[in-house]
Length: 254
Image (tube, rainbow, N blue to C red; front, side, top):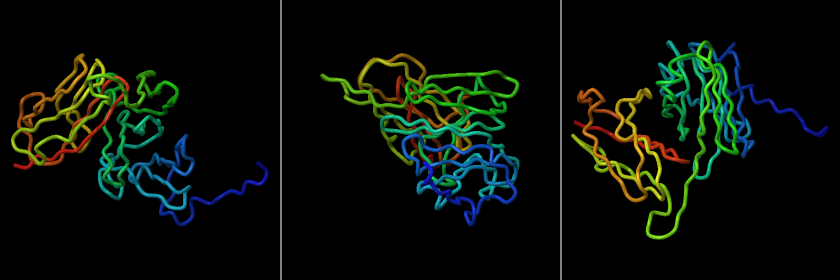
């Protein structure tokens, strides 16, 4: 309206000096939350606010070569926020492909690469999401346009089956040399269960098949897809099923 007064959300916020603002994404369900993206190399790439711009915190996480943003990037070009039932997914387009996370945790945020075998490590100049069906459209530089439905929700059913899709914390955690990852399905679904490192690189695929409703689990022996033993450290396991995605952290301690 004509009574709106502009608010300065830049001065004194410790944003990078002389950096290029390539995108500002406002949460479609909560206008106090937003992501600001800077496309320069050598600076912190992303900042997040939950109070309408009064304060901002860097969220580049494992997409920064160093905590202060120096190094080789990647360069971040675009951000989109996709609300869902029970979870929100954050997508960013970068000079090395598309990444996502469901948890923003400052500089400890872990961004996982999407479409490694399809989109690949190409420049993602822009992306858009559609809340109604979870459509994510990705525009690349030199590799075409991609889309996928990524509706994040928790399904419910009745009877003796689980009433919600749930990914449990692995046990034991920390672990050595193996751990069990369990989850429940309220209905039949195609399920992918994958392991990632701190840099968001896919190390192993534990599941990629159709499963019936019920309780399921898989063992992981801390080896990558080529059978090589992994060193001590923090790893992530991610479950993708129809209408659901979730990522959890685990610790290998040798």
